[in-house]
Length: 352
Ligand code: GLY
Image 1 (cartoon, rainbow, N blue to C red):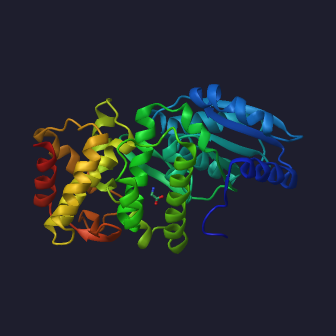
Image 2: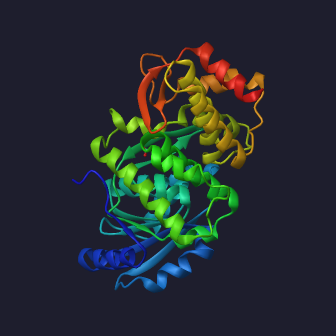
């Protein structure tokens, strides 16, 4: 098994989907969409698909709030009602919520049917749809249930970004920033020099997507099941996920990238306090992120609940909260235990 799924861009992506369909000859093709991708993306994809197989469309409601086992059950029932057999092919057309859940649903249905990812958000293009992480939230605990399983291929169409709101674009851009911070100082230098993020410049955005995917591919191919180096991709996520879970529980969800942006500021501060990152680098990270990401309104009273979510983080072991920290810009280390007092201090620093 290859340790990373094949990823194809633009016309080549469609060609590869068509040749896969021709070779595999699925009994049915099921497009999994949400209300947005149904309206804005599916009409662009369907006419390009060359297939003799019947095509079915299943729509789910967008939003992290729906990424749960109830939706999975509905999907498994819908697949059963449509009499999808083991030669069915699911094509996940959507953002990270949809590709995470669609991959999980496909892999568990009848012990596994094949699936393809067509990410339509920047976040899903540079992160969620590649590398084989699939799953759903359990209550407010993010991605608590899931498996590592690869799609047959991923098709990246950068023009789908024009269907997104500015907030959703920014949410994906946080993962791009993360890639520079953990693995490539030059990439960070380029990205952090933007006064305006070039979301409308497809050539530039395609270059960013490509660079980010290459960084992620390199990390994932060294450690598919995240026993070591892959953990660096979680920089900003220990704090970010806990804050996201907190707001999910309060039914005022924030976007993933907003949580990660906050997480990267707070975890950079912890990196300084641990004697790793230079303070001047922390200040430039904070300054850059603060220009583009609205400050999340956290209060001192929330810290206890946020810490409880952190103790449940998948990267922990032996009841210690384990962090990915920056040794310098472009170099991350993982499995660093951080004491509760320092975590609180770092969060208070963000609040004040
Ligand atoms: N989103 C982090 C990873 O795929 O490992």
